[in-house]
Image (cartoon, rainbow, N blue to C red; front, side, top):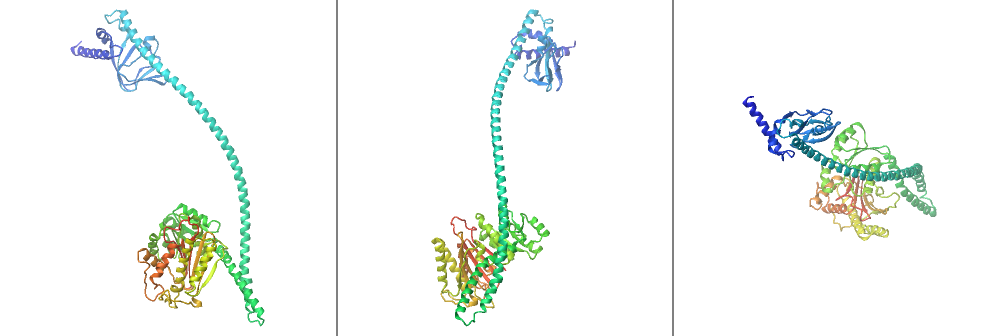
Length: 600
């Protein structure tokens, strides 16, 4: 043996002895024994994945882990993982002299030393009994450790088993409760199905009844229209031929009969208008450009059952595609999709456009100025859904029928409307008082009456002083102080009307001039919101040459009423309608100036 080989063996033996000294199994043995044991130990290295021991193999070695991780498998199942320096494996097959009962695999690169137990007595100076005693002590310690580990696992198993039994009991209880709930839910669903079936039958019956009523209503409206247009007109003409009868009693009877006929004709006008609107709106196509889902639903509810064919888009490009594919009668756009309106006018020149907004006046006025072709403007309420529903239906009906005028369109059908002629400036106070007295008898409270009186006074002042113009469009009385008496000629006189349906108070003033145009309204509003108090001046001598008071009056009207509607037929007729919610808890239609504008 060379010196280098001897040196290497010495170093290996020294490292083994040092390892044995720190081992929990050999650390308390005499160093003399460890020095004699070291040459019997063999250092071994195993790569990752190597089988150190195989199941069924005859094993005579005890292995001591120096470094790495070892997994022990039994019948394919992982039984244990050894990773501590000094951990031992292979000892059971040595003790029992039976084949290995498990498989030992290197999980990582592993370094061990092994020793043949039967060789210890052969190569040491210690007698066999001492060696046997030492081995028994080692094996006893190993078995004790494994027994303690087994006991711990048994206790854990018992604890886990008890927890599993408790969990099983809880799950069984939950399952029973679920089964009971399922049975109850099934019974409830069965009951609900029967109820829904009954409700469906009732709805079907109601639907059929409603169809019959609608059919009857249509027939009735047609008959009433025939009575109004044919029979009453013929009767009126016949009575007219009797005016020159020689008998005074006959003349008196004729005049009385004429008054009755005229009264009946007035009563039938709203019915005629309603029938005309319903016929006009049927099968019309409306495109709604609206990206608010809530407002889309409201529009569907408003136009459902009217015969209107409603399409809804929520994006600009989507709207452009629809307009290129389909002809529409009306397009309604909100503030966010207002850019679709000029596109619609370019693709379909005859389309009627409506701008619908929930914004306050300072926000939407610049848009109205920018899109000067918007002749129909509707503000809506985010809170008062029923009022918005009514306004959508009214707006579409007015546009498709071409019949803009009449406060009846904004209140419940059949309500009696009071009417007074606007003859001169002196009787306006009496007219306002008659209106207040009428509303007072209906139970309207004083604060609401004061609002109505103020609005009525302003509207009448406008109809008397501001609206009248000559054939060239020059104002007739606007230059006069408001204390100057003005007596209107018969062709200059307008109408003052008012009514209530229990939910709304409605006031309207109408003049036969039709000069209160969109531009004038916007100018007045912009000047008021800019702090100029309605001071607006256009070219002298035109119909828009108004005093500042007219602008302030308009502003007061629109800020006081819940909604103001302007219906203008150019150079023919102007109607301003002011609406008030009787219920004080109902929110104002918009955050600020709220109006509808329709221009023909």
